[in-house]
Image (cartoon, rainbow, N blue to C red; front, side, top):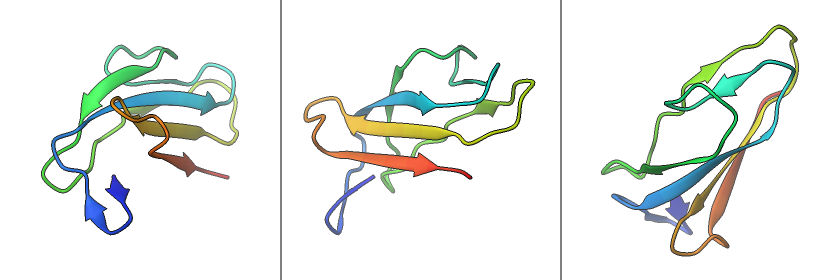
Length: 77
């Protein structure tokens, strides 16, 4: 995760499933609830996604726990 061109390393972020097809789960608990993760030294996290029974677009939002206005949205088509 970046703020401008600054890497946000070792920061707590909230990961939320914003849009998904039927049955898709994600995260360490394999459900649809948001969870908190910590970015690595490069400002990245790995979000495990487990497909459901229906194909479709997925949107996952990641925001800083300390400042939710700093966020990123990942989309698939």
